[in-house]
Image (cartoon, rainbow, N blue to C red; front, side, top):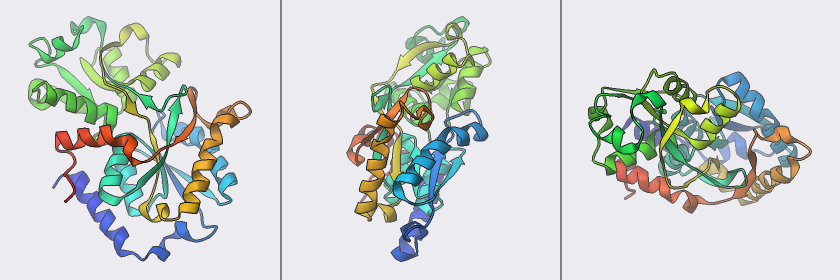
Length: 299
């Protein structure tokens, strides 16, 4: 069994075996644990970035909200499944994994520049000789180095892997070296010419250019996906049963957008609020997971 499936399945089984009333999150006034993925270059900056959101939710929900950064998308999916977090701001693929194996449920989607969607992309550096996707897929690309994000990443792993498979390419055989690392490291190493190509997403590349972490002319986009659903705010299966709480949480998240003028620190730059969504919005990610064999159909 795929390791992701195994530990998510075990976590889900443990959650199902526990009585509903034993969940601390369901106790009136008990602290809620908000898990957040590693959206920033390091844990300290990530915590500082999302602490205002946690404080906003605490004030609106009338309960303490404890923030914790989780290093990988896989780890965040697992923590939502096993009860280490109650609410998670997580990548789309991580959400689909948590939903598929532990019945976690999305309640809202974050907006970036007013839109609930983003794009996966593949980047090279200008002197690589890989100027278009056919270069990477063909003889010019064979034997090169390629970097994916971690295996819980939507844009860094699942979507580019699906694209390669649709083109009849097995990355592990086509490339001489395949790495799995963080999005920021992919852009930095591609721009420096240390790796030939890598997978990323438009929001990360734009942010790194704006922050001066890479130069735009050193990062060439040679492929972009169809629109993908943005990061999800998901709750555990147990917490989702409390429909009144879910509604309060969605309302609290909807208030973030209008509050940004007075409190711009509530979200990172270019993020403009949340919109209420449900599981159907993430169907494109689920379909890619099934097509690549990373998800097994439910019986």
